[in-house]
Image 1 (tube, protein in one colour):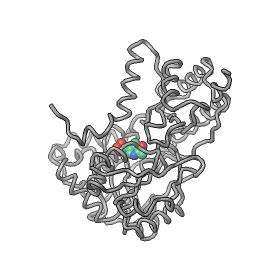
Image 2 (cartoon, protein in one colour):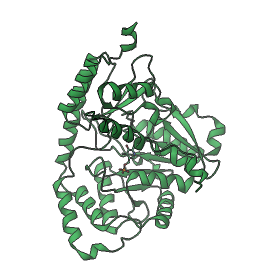
Image 3 (cartoon, protein in one colour):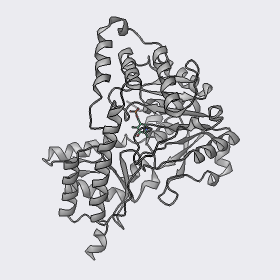
Image 4 (cartoon, protein in one colour):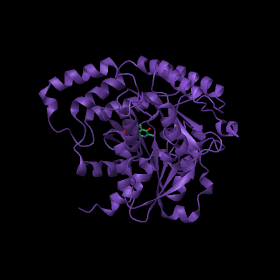
Length: 395
Ligand SMILES: *Cc1c(COP(=O)(O)O)cnc(C)c1O
């Protein structure tokens, strides 16, 4: 048996690898605290589950769904985007369904990247941007995101030779793993930049509703003329606690939307109709669970900030997402710190390098566990003297 060069060119999915280590620790009898999860701990809201129940009972919904999403689903997306961002979309040409935005990101890359093409992506970032680019035969070009640049890349630093070969530029605000946020002024700059260089701008807006302290995340399509060059990927996973349901959508540039839909119609047959109907119930139903969950994340964030500060960490409260992007103890690599956290304290935190070369010197901590369990994690860190200055303290 010989694997394709394509498959051999990418590493195993990082989170699958992290999960193996976690399982091995559990098998050794360790009570593992998983601060590596990017999956809401609360259940899908009741009215969404009920809509699914009702829809699944109706045999009409048991057949192949239409390609690109049902008319009703696409119209509900248009209405939701209009209400939320004040943008106008054509349901027939500027919207397509996705089996989650992970799938959408992969297909967008497959639709635009050929051998030798460049995809300009943030670093650190959601790993799919990089691996799907390599699977497509292309080459990622990394834009460094650092605390110093507030996780906003310097577009003007991208070399002309890279721009000539670039087909895509990807952004993600609010961002995973950095929790970085961008304002409309940066999106305006990015749209103008991509227009000038004729590069499709892909915005991953998976965390649009997970925002705190009065901050509201903009859509890139709020920028005038953005539709000429930009497509935006959305997901119901994080907003509606629906990670397992697999549903999302892409909106924006009609040519890009059609390209994604063309790839999809050749490889999948869309989303089970009852899931689309449940998603419509999500868009049109009450939203109090969003505030409820955001308040939970705020409480956990505040606990984490207080406890990490006590352990000597430099840390700022995040305004969006459920991730905290933290420096490893001074002098320690990402891999060493993640291994130490698991071996000494039974805590899983992904190493920053899982998200790209610029993740070295960082780790990600998520807020998807209840406060008591998080407090236990910080207790264990204190017990084992895992502090920001731990290497200095030793000498
Ligand atoms: C979770 C996540 C996704 C994937 O969401 P799905 O819709 O569940 O596939 C995409 N992008 C980012 C940045 C994420 O964190």
